[in-house]
Amino acid sequence: MKQLFLRFEHWTTSLSMMIASLMMALAAAFGIHQIFTRFIIESPAEWTEVLIRFCLIWMVFLGIPTAFRQGAMISVDMLYRLSGQRMRRFLDGVVAISALTLCSVILWWGWDYAQRGSVQSMIGLEGVSMFWAYLALPVGAAFSIVGIIGFWLEPQRMELETSL
Image (cartoon, rainbow, N blue to C red; front, side):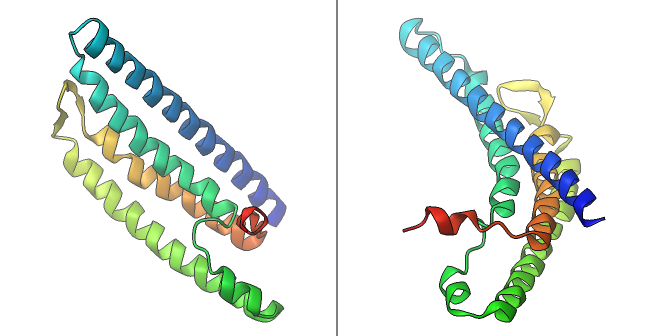
């Protein structure tokens, strides 16, 4: 059962990181387009600024699950390095419960916020509902919950190898 969940977690975390990378690429492309239209053509496209913000929000919330999975999100390095094996497992549990609580709150209230924001439209993109921008919160939180549980089941601690 553990291995099945870890395979599912690997798939979901990879998917979220792939989409986060795509959002970063889209934000960069929209930024280049904005520079071109503003400074070369001298006719700025106002919709690009809105879409850049939209892409960056989604990029952050879909990149967070990878940080959780690699143990780089909530770091208690000093305490972790000074403690024994049993204390480390306890710390893992405290960090996991804290992060799961936070992500559960973000999931619950993010969904509520997205539903309430569905009546708003994006400035510059009047035909697009703000629901799609606000949806990043519960979607990112759901992916993060899977990553947190995956880290708790099989800690990776990749931030310790890259720190000085």
